[in-house]
Image (cartoon, rainbow, N blue to C red; front, side, top):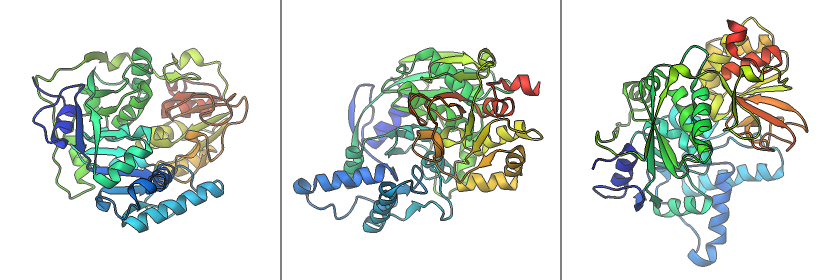
Length: 426
């Protein structure tokens, strides 16, 4: 029996000819990421284990580890400032040279940097200190988030264990209609299978609709897989993806593809042409309605940003709506990375945002996780391009967050009520 792409990557990484779902393998890791929340957590593990394993004098391969400051930058308080210092110390102590620092050249949200900078390549095993590490499966890698203790082990030994996940295959036929996006498709899938529908499973996406998407849109799909409980999400590399990566790295690419006779746990066939602009209501990404059904919901704020909705493709969508229009409610737009920000500048998107009355922030995770950059007050209602909307996610527990595509968020910014972009643009 053949193997899926996820199984083939884990087989290669664990030195096995074949693996099957449910097998427990000890796999070599190719790349590791730590950010300004996870890195200090890993450092704490090193200190707690010192009486048992002694001082960690060196890590297995500093060139395979990269760091980024994205969650609490600029620091919000003394603790977050200290976390940055710990990250600096980790980089210096262990000789980690790939360090993306806030306000120092290229920096921004880890999950966008991972493929935008070609830090992770097809066929690799990549782990990070963040639950949305799944995002990087967009390059055809096995990408998964791990806890601090697991990452600490990987840093010392260069390997870790995985239970080989069963794979759910989502075959997306047709092409998305104008004003429907990968975010709408993601919400549709989560609504269909539930927020636990892919628990510890691999979500693999394929089909004409996927091939028609650019890399940023595909990354929205892999990113949102976390909200369905997936262990990892993955898309087999195609020429568009390989060309994208080759424009960013001279490293050789070794794409992995699943076998034709690979067996999937379940196959979902979805017609992209049936997907309307959708919105996830409080307090679950699976609590989905069409945007039109929510047209009487007034919002206080609009947030465009994060690993889910702050990429250059997202910003282009927002600009296509805001050009020549004024926002009616407070609207914050945060590019995911500095490279994205500069591209938006070159394309005139930033000027469009500012002329519309919106605010443009520096590249960070921003408001997404409710810790920084303008959290929501009690009772405040926000429509956001981010990925989570549980109570308190973006601020007060009694605030409300609606999740939507960049197009729907931008249309809502113009009207002040949740708006299907087709009803604004026609």
